[in-house]
Length: 187
Length: 164
View 1 (cartoon, chains in turn red, purple):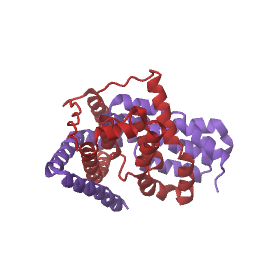
View 2: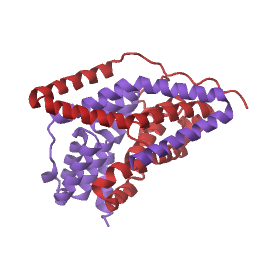
View 3: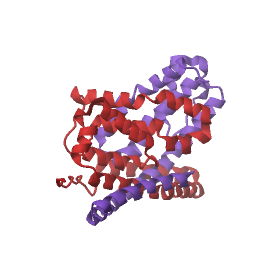
View 4: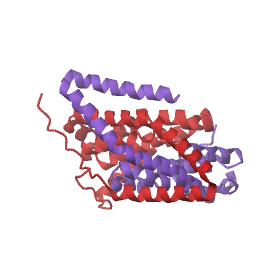
């Protein structure tokens, strides 16, 4: 078995502007709530959100671990062949299938998607993957939608949404190939 | 239910870890370390995103679009629903409870599907607060851009294939 080259590390900046902007907006909104609604409501929201954050942590960690292991275990050639630029319709279908079956929360999918991107999946496959999880991911539907809409509605909605992830992936590829979106090599 | 998903998720992690061990102990260590490093890098971003989005959801007016989304509202209703979905802040609880409330108050199923699909795919608030911190920005915007027509397609399919 040939040795795979070490997968490139994604470049990391310790501080980035988008996070800073989001922090600023969050801080402003928090201040507005405190000023408008008082300390008690402010703290109620804070504790609710912290609980949500705490619930998410195991899922995020699992997502990061899955992403890390998949990066190390899957040979780049395999990923590039199955879901890279040249993978065609099959690549989109594979990506959509993974999106359907991947368990986890909304946060889990992004580290995994990043890992696939760094390993050679093309933008279209990543878009198909995320769109698939978002619209037809079965754990997402089970946990979040079912309680609100009931199984009939959810199943009907999902069946109708089945072609959408592949469509989104196709549109993304067309956009990239038409030069409408610039994709550098950096992940 | 959430526990079941956690278990499934960690079973996947365990399976991957096991495969890594089969290939060599160093792969397991590398994978675990890389995953944890990534996790720690993400933590402050996620914390800001989750806590911040709670406050932002409080501050933004929750537009109740139910009166505008009846079954007869057709394409206009779908457009309004899509816009509402994109603008709805907050997590799944907010998004789905508005959708379910709209359905119960007489909104048409295609309109509610447009709303849910738009909210799921490109709620602006979530794009900015959750996705951009975690993904390369150009992928986020590419995905949002190609997803723009999807709520309309879903609503059209819903109109054609009437709900059983």
